[in-house]
Image 1 (cartoon, rainbow, N blue to C red):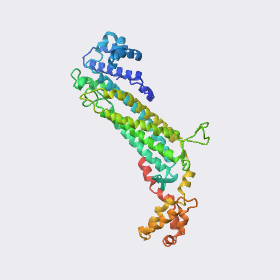
Image 2: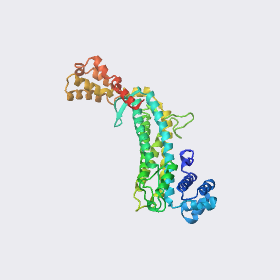
Image 3: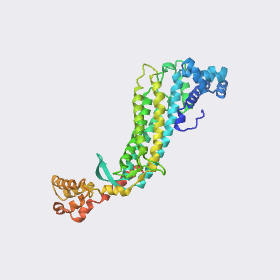
Image 4: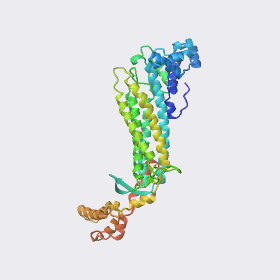
Length: 431
């Protein structure tokens, strides 16, 4: 088994040096497979493994002349290896090396992303547990709807991120493939057994039926899944941004000592990290479109995908990784203001409890249309007025008091009724 490279941070996985290391890793794995099957001398493979090296600057010098990146790389490697280098790349085409090595890069990147996704899961889980019973108003269309808890909101986030975790497990299987099948993928000059042994050494599986390249539906799937993770992160960031608005202020990004929000207005505390995440999500989504465009190559291959992938694959991985680190820190240190949540919940005398009053009147035998009109009139009278008091209007309405006792009216305004089934959701999530 070839030694796996220690997993560095994401940016290092996409350096020129790391890329060339994976190329060499593939070439050596193929040589080892060839030797195991008796096609090349084992002694030559040991010599290759002992001497093989490269100099990224020298590779670029050669490439400037030959205008072919893999040939430049092989030329440089052979400068280190000498005569035994004639056994390197036997029966291969450039895409055997490029696509198999790219699979190693994508797997390593995905492992790092999955690691940080797990950290986000744990942070959201803890925050959801902490605010399980922190009552706030839910909103639809941006308008106050009915009571819920902040923990319940976070539970929804957790469920979404857990789905991503499952998707990424499947994605790892999809992308962890290599191909050592030669020009147009027919194995004309190399045996499938070589591919099987080399891929096993690399921790990959042979592509089921490659052309000269690994079909780009796999890579499009990869970028789309990252775009979906980024979209969820944006959803969380947008929620934080909305809840941090001055007129809401139910949560707030942590504001460090000495931090400043505006060059002009000293009072400002802006949700800059959430806004940054929103912007980055746009970029990752745009890369998904480009990845889809890469699927339709000419015949068994062209290289129209290559220039695109040099931009979108490292960019999508680095952005997604950074976004996960950023949202994890943001949620972990999020400032939560239960007092403001309670204040907003009881805005205009608790209009968010209107449905409970409606249902109580219907339960007493009142016609639904009549009950709706009574409750709506009181709610709209209280709505958006500094002195508006829905609770007072309901308790003073004779058509209500004829049907509901004071205790029954008060029960309608008890937010705990909205939390009766909260535990079931938490149990599903194991919180």
